[in-house]
Image (cartoon, rainbow, N blue to C red; front, side):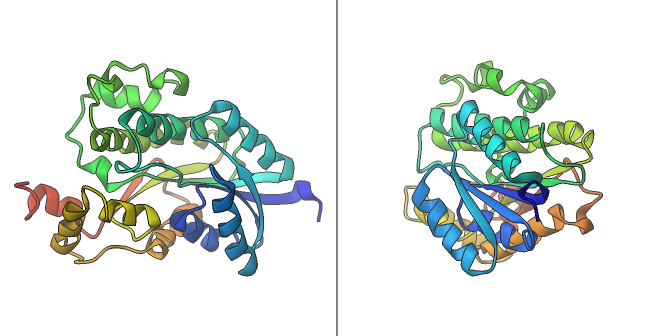
Amino acid sequence: MSNKLKNIIVVIGAGSIGQAIARRVSAGKHILLADLRQENCDAAAKVLSEAGFEVSTAIVDVSSRQSVHSLVTAATGIGSVTGLIHAAGVSPSQASPATILKVDLYGTALVLEEFGTVIADGGAGVVIASQSGHRLPALTPEQDKALATTPADDLLALPMLQPDQVTDPLHAYQVSKRGNSLRVMAEAVRWGKRGARINTISPGIIITPLAKDELSGPRGEGYRHMIDTCAAGRAGTPDEVGNVGALLMGPDGGFITGSDFLMDGGVTATYWYGDLAAQ
């Protein structure tokens, strides 16, 4: 088979969740695995290759348009981009508010803009947002529209995102993840004109290295309380996110686009209407 005939699944963020979705949707396709760190790519590529997948790797900094554009060029040089799994990001315990906004909010907007110009007819994408986006109080319609539709390169200049408005990492993370789901809703219109679909998944506490950072960090006690108090009474697994990702990217999800899927074991329900509500 000619390289140009290959169907490409681009996975940005070589962590557990990206891998779990990729395993379910990439049989018979070529996985282009991209991460900020080569060692993360290599570790994930080894696991996926040994499981029978065809994998290549690339370095990407999602906060750089040039870097994301280079990844698009690499992907289209291999074949037709039929799938995008965007699972890269930083958490509140890992970075400053400015870095979180640049990576999680601006970076996602960049990825959607750049890959939205090459996604194949019949293609689909999934962006990993977070339950945190559902715990931010309602924004104004004008703020929602600004987060959804402001061109990526103008996004961080919005008044609502300035340092005096976003003063702590958790708020930055919540705004970013709310922005991700709004941006995907808007991008679904543009992707639809190419015959492609795009959705977000907003996971709760999923046991990954990033979650372990949070559980052992300054908010660890709160995280454990969320797990103990929620309806499911436990944290989630990457494979459970993979199941939802497979639905959204596969033929059974053909009528789903521009949507956000909250899967948090009931934490958000408990936050608004249960034992976490008073805190």
